[in-house]
Image (cartoon, rainbow, N blue to C red):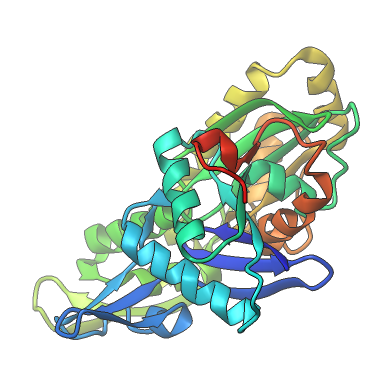
Length: 338
């Protein structure tokens, strides 16, 4: 079995060719400090965020697209592979995603986590390459395509042509930073502290970054910082707009920066083909229209943008001999391929 893993800051997705995404759960691990063992991973651990006792640590083992807690990441990957492959004797070949500007040290940590989890061979693919493939784009043709993959920890921007990356950038600014901005905004304006799950829910429900009118509302609950008591406040889409718009414009500036270093012939192709949005951030209301207004280039979200990268990882096995930049054999990192 060949499987592709999108090991994201927010979610881990595993895809199998001809089956699509077969595993999709939050990248969260719950660790019991007293017994020194992992008690839950994925959605089960996610439900414990902000609600667990002191002796249970609920950990997000990836931060801004890279591994911050190696042991927890290895345990998470191992458990997820087991759920997908079952008890089969032959361990799979695995394609793992990494951000565009990942370092060799960070790449090696991803490879070792997969190897120790039982992978037979490990390949790395850069997220924008996988995102374009998962969006159904033929990246082998001599035409420029631009993708903006807004995940949980990083926003990857790339221009591709003929199986190679021509221009790219990776911003450590994505869904988690946007959630944190919402928490700060509610704290500063209403003096109420809300949790990260509440902020994420408000983002999903209310976010509108293109001409919000304040018509959509929802109640959020948290702790009043003045009285220390539980409290509730009504947020609207204009509140969320004011909380996140500065970060959105940083992403737009990143897009413009990549366009500025793109060769003119490919820039012409991008003007024709448009900019493709993938990842969870592609679902932010009005983001495509705001980017289109600022860049004067047609912008649209891919079909099922959340799963684009995961789908692309499993499709990568068809292109082992043709992909250039962003697809690397494990032997480059000093391992022998068995």
